[in-house]
Length: 424
Image (cartoon, rainbow, N blue to C red):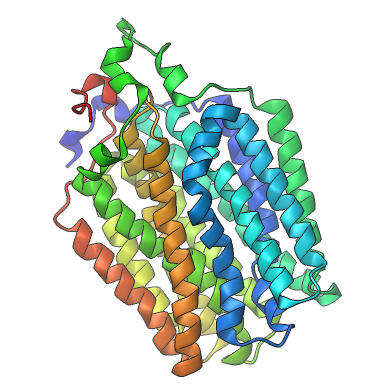
């Protein structure tokens, strides 16, 4: 399988300083998000609503991300990547602060939903920068580095959030808002005002000299061209499965399961989310390198299997220590496939062309899973049990596996070195 990769893949590749800035910013964002995660469902239930209604508060954030994802690509072209990133961060900061002062369930739902608009803005901007700036032979490594920074924050954030909850469920939201203001300051002062992917393509150079614009697909990859690639179609399904499991059910049901089924408090819920993040972090220490050498597809298949089985078993645990152990395994699965998925979409787009719609669709597939997952699981809990609700994550992962098995994996060959797709 390694014969599909260029020989330079094994050579050390330097990481651009702009990526290091994005990695540092991601760490601060993750700490704040991790602080809020274990208390959000419980804060919603403090307004005396059902488990299903509490899960909707988690889903509404992903719902607004899904709706505004296409618009975020347009904003990147008009405001630039840095401007869109900072604006999005400030919107989420304002939303988080407003959640702290919500006086009813419907206010909390509204304020949390508005934050999704800003979230999709800085997410698409960051993804675009990472894809364009990452060396082709190190896309998996860069994806691991970026994801690892999120996980370091996710490890510390939930535990801190659980402790802060003892001082009131509103406090974590204010801390999150403060962390996001630090991110805006960091990016605004240390990240250059970059150009969009289309503009960057006009000045692209290779070892042989400048690359004519016409050999870089005119700087734009149409969505329907990407949809013609089996690996990209399979990627959308596995991204949906990951959104359903890691960003949906885990955030919405794990804290409630710890309280209702295990009789534990917010501290245990926070620790369980941190343990999941630790498992993912352990996988990221080697999964990015394997995605660059072994291949994208094997890592995605392995990650889907491990995460899907782990999440299915999680709902049947009746002991706190087993709960932590299975959370660790499920997190390991998420870390195995994460860098490979990011590297796959980077392979499809390439460094020297813009893929705003392709990126937005990839993000939307994950957000759609994060919307449907908590809602479906929440009502399955109300009708049946937590075990049935968590088992749905296993079923969704198996469906994603079926899409990936016949698909051919991508490779990191720069698009400017291979024939451009036909114009559409």
